[in-house]
Amino acid sequence: MDAHLNCITVPSPGDTGQLGRLIGDLVARKLDRTRPLWEMWFIQGLADGRVAILAKVHHAIVDGVTGSELAMLLMDLEPDPPCP
Image 1 (cartoon, helix red, strand yellow):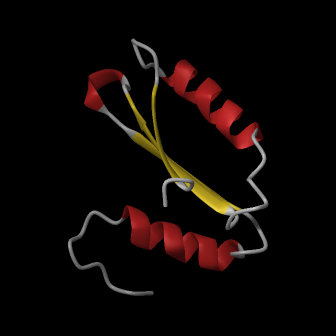
Image 2 (spheres, one colour):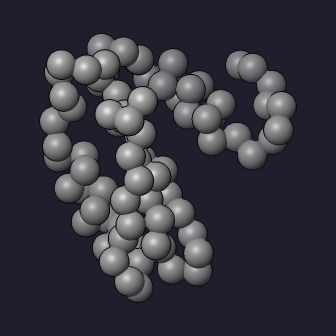
């Protein structure tokens, strides 16, 4: 899991421009093909105590519908979300 779950902090003040540049840099990196082809980034240090999550998944693992359903389950704020 250490190779797939990452934490990174945006430099202060953590505005949307800095977040956008960081996401651009992270998305531009190729996934390590010696490992399962997915990774998640927990991004902290955003203004007003906000955080962001970036998930990168190779298209060979999920298609558009499956990826959308997975994102809905992972990002749901309900303690027991309904399964699609």
